[in-house]
Image 1 (tube, rainbow, N blue to C red):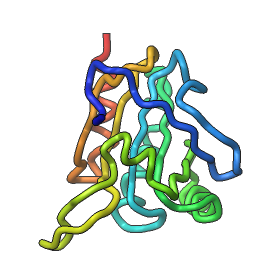
Image 2: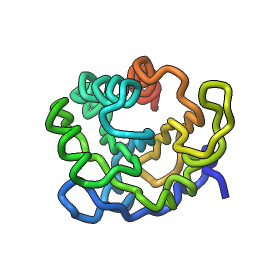
Image 3: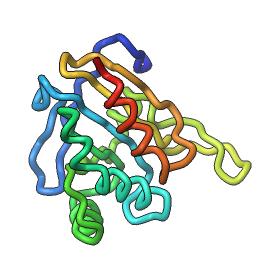
Image 4: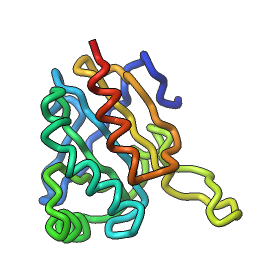
Amino acid sequence: MPVEEGKKAPAFRLQDSTGHEVSLKDYAGQNVVLYFYPRDDTPGCTKEACGFRDLWRRIQKQNAVVLGVSPDGAAAHQKFAARYKLPFTLLSDPTKKTMEKYGAFGEKVMYGKKTLGVIRSTVWIGPDGVVVKHWKRVAKAADHPAHVLEALKQQP
C-alpha cells in the first residue's frame, strides 16, 4: 500500500550508523522529515544532505527531525556524516523493504533508460504519525531541503 497524505505512515525499524535500532515511534510528538536517497557521497546525495545540514537549526525550530535513509551500511554512513558534518541521523535499509513501503524504491528512468533503484523522495510525517506531505520524486536535490523547510513553516 503506497504512502498517502492524511494516512498513518508505515512503521519501520532500521539501524543507524552506530548499529542502534531506530523506529518511527521513537519520534512520536515530533515532525519527522524522512528522506530517501540512493547513495552516500555521490554528487546529488551530498548536495541534498548538506542542504539539510545547512538548514538544520531552522528545521529543528519547527519541532522536526531529519532522518536520511539509503541502502548503504553503517560504515559508509559514518564516513559520509563525518566528512560533511551531518547533524542528523542516517539509517540503513539494505533490504530496501522500508523504501518499498514508502514508494522510494522501484522503476525509474536514469539517462533515458528504465531501471530499478532508489527513488529520491521525502515524506513529512506529523507528530501524530500521519503523513502530512509526500514529495514522490525529488528532481533537484540541492533545492529540496529549502522546499521542505518552507512546508514545515506553513504548518498551523
